[in-house]
Amino acid sequence: MKTVYIVRHGKAVPESAHIVDAERLLTDTGVARTCKIAEYMAESKPVIDQIIASPAERAYATALIIADKLGIPSNKVISNDKLFTGDDSDTINLLHELDDSINSVMIVGHNPVITMVANRFASPRLDSLPTTGVVSVHLDTEKWADLNDAKVIQNFTVWPGML
Image (cartoon, rainbow, N blue to C red; front, side):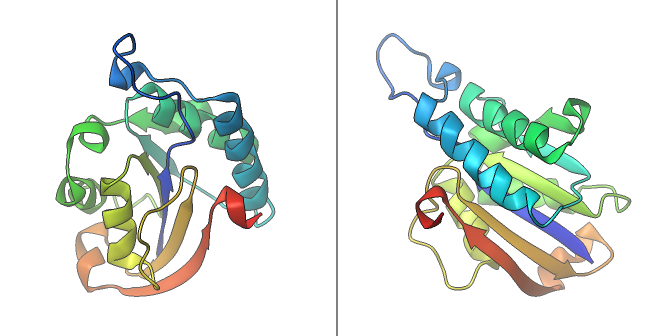
């Protein structure tokens, strides 16, 4: 059994002519909502072997906050450019390429791609995964390479407005 947590980054400062998109920071609200979601997740004591985040500041910061609240060492948080510049197929390919010793992974990315990835697994489908929204699914497979054929078992879908 493999578990995937699909996370949209927290609320960030708006784009402007003075801020490069990749350097947009989380707002205070984004930090607070991310902490709230992490606290919700902590109640179930999840074991997450690896967190892969977009290298964009807002996504990586979201990943680090969640890791901290869940007691996951920061060295288990890595970045991958495909979560910033790629499409949903690139993200699914990241999952396919994971070592099978990893049983649980969190990916932290951006809309619209992160919603498209979530909708490959989630039921019901989402129009748009809100900021700091999380979709968690179990995949009935032992190999990441076989995830497309795996039975999907919905774990939970949550975002700050639900709490």
